Image (cartoon, rainbow, N blue to C red; front, top):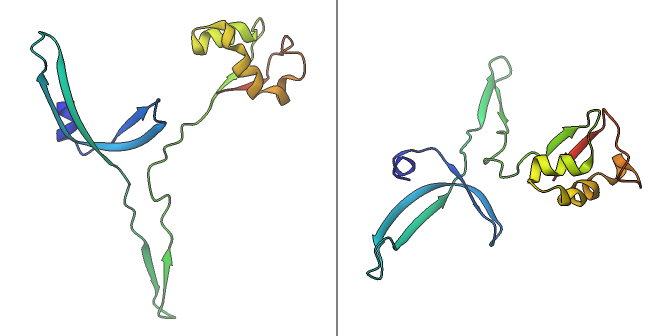
Length: 135
C-alpha cells in the first residue's frame, strides 16, 4: 500500500458488493489498532478516480495556412476487461473447462449460457476448434 501512495500509477479498484470497477490512485492510507484487542486494526483509505489525459494534436498546412485538430484517442483508461476465451481441444468437456476457469465444474452453465449460439441445444456436444467465451 505504501508504494502505491508514492507512485503516480493507477491501480484497479474492484469492490464486488457495490459493483465498483475502476482505475484510481491511492490518496491516503491510515491504520491503527482498534478496540484494545491485539491484532484488530481499523483502516481508513481514500481513492481518487484516475482518468488519462490526452492532448489534441494541431497540424498546420503551410501552403493553405489552415489548421486541423485531431481527436485524441480514448479519454480515459478502459475499465472493461476483455472476455476470456477458450478454444476447445479434443477430450474437453464443459465440466472440465468450468473447473479450469472457476475452480468448480458445476459452474458449466455460465459457460453454456454465454455460448448457446456456438454450442447449440445440446451442451454435451462441443467440438475441437470451437472458441468459447468465458464470462
